[in-house]
Amino acid sequence: MTIKKIIGENGLLPALCNGGTCPTVVLTENGDVFVQGYIPAASESSELQAPPGEGFVKMSLATFEKIAEHMSVA
Image (cartoon, rainbow, N blue to C red; front, top):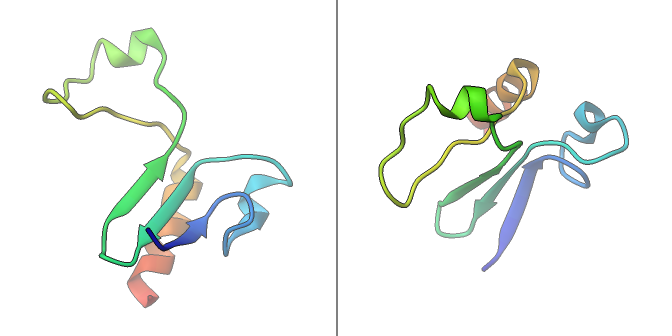
């Protein structure tokens, strides 16, 4: 699988990570998108419902906005 990191450590927008790890978005050559983020706390997870085989990750709004901004010009 060939990947292109959009945001995250060693990605195109590393400034959001402050030199460390942070939520990451990866694009594959076939158009799939993988999102890495923080696992929601138990109190948050109790409010979220995902179908079997799916889940949620958490990231800051600033990170999400940078991802969206990049995707709209990609």
